Amino acid sequence: MYILGINAYHGDAAAALIKDGRIVAAVEEERFNRVKHCAGFPTEAVRYCLEVAGIRIEDVAHIGISRDPSAHLHKKILFAASRAAKQSKQWAVGSGQTTTAAVAVDDSGEGEEGKRGRGKGEGTNGGNGSSVEKRGPGIFRQVKDRLNNAAKVRDLRDDLALALNVTKSSLRAQFHNIEHHRAHLASSFYVSPFERAALLSIDGFGDFISTMWAVGEGNSIKVLDQVEYPHSTGIVYTATTQFIGFPHYGDEGKVMGLAPYGQPRYIEEFRDIIRTEARGQFRLNLDYFRHHAEGVDMTWDQGSPIIGRIFSDEFVQTFGPARERGGALTEREQDIAASLQLRLEEVGFHVLNHLHQQTGLTDLGLSGGVAYNSVMNGKILLNTPFRRVYVQPAAGDSGTALGVCYEIHNGILKLERGEVMLGAYTGPEFSNDEIRTELESSGLVFETLSDDAVTKSAAQDIADGLVVGWFQGRMEFGPRALGNRSIVVDPRRANMKDILNDRIKKREPFRPFAPSILEERTADYFEQSHPAPTMLMVYHVREERRGELPAVTHVDGSGRLQTVSREVNPRYYQLISDFNELTGVPVVLNTSFNENEPIVCTPKHAIDCFLKTRMDVLYVGNHVLRRKSEK
Ligand SMILES: [Fe+2]
Image (cartoon, rainbow, N blue to C red):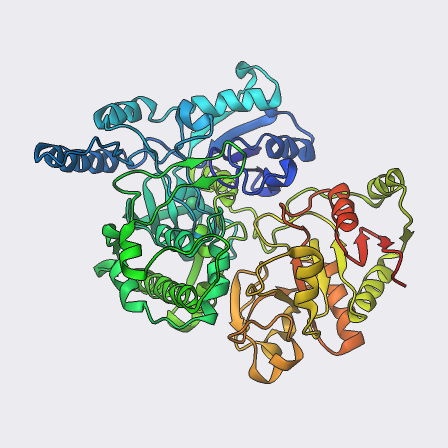
């Protein structure tokens, strides 16, 4: 039985397909249409899922989307009513403003406005994302609209029929709205190795909730508690990221990379901005934010989501003027980043310690855009009683497409658990013959190697200091390249960071590059050894090893590692093993295979990237292309 899950109408649109509990495919739309964090409907991703399964949409039994307009409706109405009361009180005292204040009640992203790509939606990638709209003060109209829309799946049916060029009547599947955080929770439990686990989903917002925790057991998830709109760690991170002068969707990772350069001298200010309360709860000091009162635009007219300003003038009062985009990064920005990061960790551990207390469990499933904060994740074992952590590889909203599939399979249909998702290799793959055809049509000179020779040759190139494109097997799901769509270089060479930035990546110089290490050697190089197969944990490199790995050791001695096992990715494991044979170092530097665009998907994307950058050599399947000046 096939189940199709969809994340649509906000950042990182994606589709996933499972068959009898096993993952057939899961992929983000951006990889096909080449629009970063693409919002809207995942047309190409859905088509790919069906194509790889060799089925038509008529063969799919269940289709779900990771939003439920009817979820938490009473809370939305209560919030809207309380805002309306405040508004009318303000008007009654004659503020003199011709206000356009809106009430951010609708975070579902549904409706005609949302489909045109303006005004609503959710973006929770990387701790991103408000899900709010900007409208006039017709608050009760909004509530009425919301009631009218509740539980409808009209948009999904329409768009799916359009995307697949079929009539709506041919969509025979049963349709489901899966509440946003339930989809996140499902994505971190049903494919985890745990039979029973504590679960935390933490993001900007989705379906009016920013944080939800639960217990998963067998094929059910029991929600324990939640933090509601407008209080959100993701909102704090995104607002501060904007204030520091990084306006793009998903820029939160840059601030995480900046934080180790600073001192948390604003920690008391951030403790005031986000306050912890009993029973794992937290609240924002709303003086610092606009989203709850004025609404914040989110648009995706150009494809990539754009979020309007979330921070209020109170930020300026406290920290001084916001940094202009492209302006100098001073100690102030570094210290704000450090304070923000520290406060996020404090709040995160506050929630997690409560979750442990509530459940008594030591296994944790983690999801939501804030779970991309790998620095926080890496400290969970040090700051909470949790002993094993499974982070959904696509922890942000793309992963809800997969969560939808499993919530239907396990939570609704009560079928048996089907799969442990150890890696994230669920996207398109290409045979050596297909790649050869592409190379021949490009008119490029290449050679073809045996399986054994491919990894040996690439390892030698890396050891020789070349910049190596490494395109193999199925593309990764989620934001990290994990050795199938990667650029791989020698971590022992301190200048490699500059070489990569100069020739290909053009990233801000303060951002670190990441190491991939043979899993069994992790403890030799890092202070923690809990597996991190999808690069969502940051650990400290052992002090005595830092000199050995200058290109992947961040300014504070940390590294966002990927632990690589033969079981999960045999060819990448072999590559690192061969590099270790040559150099005695079981580590390579791994960065995503792209310039400043979504990670490459097809051999053609890889070849184009190879040609337009100054990459030295490209391994694409068993074929090798070399830039002429090399070797
Ligand atoms: Fe989310």
